[in-house]
Length: 267
Image: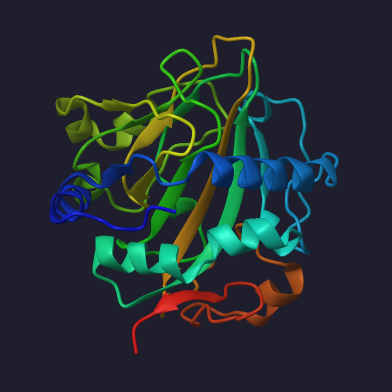
């Protein structure tokens, strides 16, 4: 795992809201993580959330055909946990953002199936149960991600323009987000094709999306979202377990070490 970041990468992340890390995983690591991800997915049937979270099942809507989505694989697969919750990765998150520590929010594999629908422009953090300008996600290509099969796209600097309103991914209107944030339309989006083993990091308020998969093969990616240590509950259920959700009130710190363990924190 290539965990060293250059000053230029750190500056790019803070200014643009995203940065790429070519060669993040070796070929052997890609093979190991990919096998673990697909193995975990194979045990879940149509259930979307592993390990006791919200009861969600895959249906047959436009969104369900954007990608095969399975969340919290780290709770049922030790290999996924070792990669997604490793302290080396956690240290990278803190280096990029300047935060002192992160907890895992949730991981998810996003498999854009052959001829899968486009992923509309959206922000991540407004879906989640906490509000933060420093939430961060990693997106790891486990197969080559190309312009043809639906690689990621980002709007540079959009994290500085965004607040906590969002667009729904359940409808096919690709550009709905820009009705809320018209200033983002003045910035040219940047495509981010990746080779297997490359990754990107993006801020939870960075506008991003992905094209349709126009090929006969799957585009397999593993992602994970992280929240700064000390983040508090904003009232949104997201995928929190019912029992845990019932115990929370607005403003409570999200510090459940079983559900959202610390990945890395400075002393």
